[in-house]
Length: 413
Image (cartoon, rainbow, N blue to C red; front, side):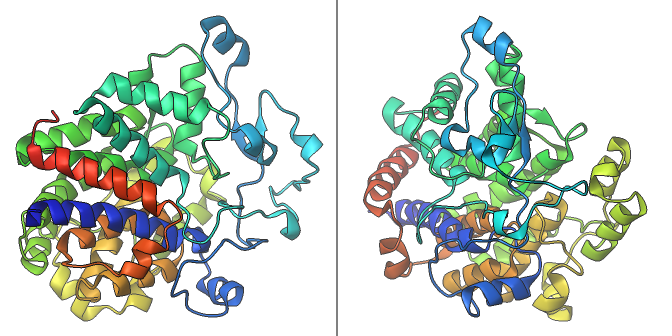
């Protein structure tokens, strides 16, 4: 096996490991709640615990246009057994017995974990959507956008495929548009209208797809076009413009320190620190009340000077960077530099970096997938216990081997 093929495989293993490790601590913003819930620093695969005291999944909105979808012959139920957690246009939320007060708060014992019911070492929905992409490439021998979209729709609308109750906002927005008759290739929500589209989850499939070619010019275009199938976001495009060529260099065997220094020098840190961002929200009475134009500006304002990662890491501790300087939320202007800082601060050590990411909370799942992808590409060997501990290890091994073989052949585009 070529060393390049080995690095592609390790990158993919890293993605699934980073996801499953982070899953139980997903969306805890108060890190003391992680240690209280799991008895200290998480060091291995864990199952999600009930209740998740900070969870807000219950009562989420999904409102497809059911009659229009039926008329068009389009499927719209993407929730199936998980519909009880959501307020939808085709189920009775009140029948689930959840009570939400006038402040949008739900009783603590009804705060179900976003990934309620998953086992230790099991992957989340976004990781399974990576597998949908990989299987399309493996089956066809190359990437086909239309076939991917068909598989994406089929996977999400077929009962029993998805064990994970957390159907992220971009997916719900996509299927709401799909139910209205919008062409599948144009169903993605827009960051200017929906601030949540600026999320780390939008990086994952484009980065995996970019590994199918060693032509950097072509790989970035491919990644950006695939991004737009599900996320129309300036912030995601900006991050991919750094991460795609960085990943390519790591897969080619370039040293991580020099690679990170080179590509991060093109980045700019957000104008608002993590603390300042949430203070801006408070001025409007909370994030949901921030006007769309103001929200867009808050998340697309950057410092004038280019980022010096090495200096930043020397001057700032992890405790200061997480949440104070950089938010642990999903927003790319914070999430991308945070995951790169975590790798650098932990000297590109695969396991240490991923565990620090887990215990930082916030959107650690999607940060963890990207972090695992990058650091897997730099690692000679990955911890075998982390590979063996993945619930779908056998199936993943077959898919990873097949995808890496096709990527190495360079004929998939």
